[in-house]
Image (cartoon, rainbow, N blue to C red; front, side):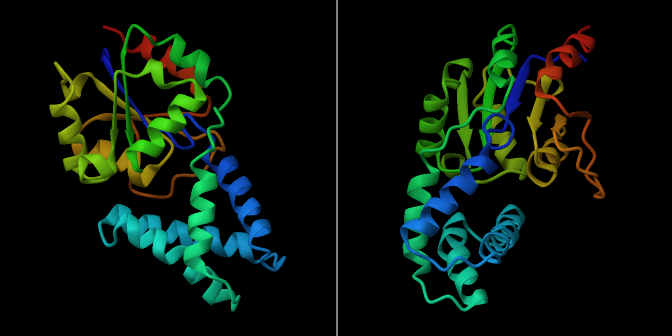
Length: 230
């Protein structure tokens, strides 16, 4: 199958979200002078992950995540702190993070014979700003972010909207590239679009979600595409 349209996730596919997340968390904890409790980071990460999974299922909104994640964390650990203030400080710091994953820039530069697009769950102005700061924005023809689309990955509706706004789009010529089985790969399955699971840490897949391809290095994408040319 020859691919033409490449649909990239942003966080932990192009930009190192986890590095930015941990840096922002620690800066916020220090700024608010929160207790140095070793349970704080892992508890937050667990609660945050569960809330994002609920969002992907359509059970809650993004705003629910932001209202609840630090409030729940502090309540669980019995820390007397303002969870909504923590969210505001953390979010302001996180929005400034734009660490490019190694070899991403070179890979995108090698793919200019294809049509590159962004498909992301997030806030459009924030994601656009992070792409600009990273120096990656000019590689992409358009950006589709859930808060502007009105629905999120992995819903079929998200990718239907994307398809309707890409000139000449055909799902058989499209490939979704992302790190999340539940968001990117499940989204591809829902929309009948082939997928690449970017799995740099060799995580096992114990789910029923099945990517079309799996890569551990983003730079291997060029060889995969060449191998699939008609």
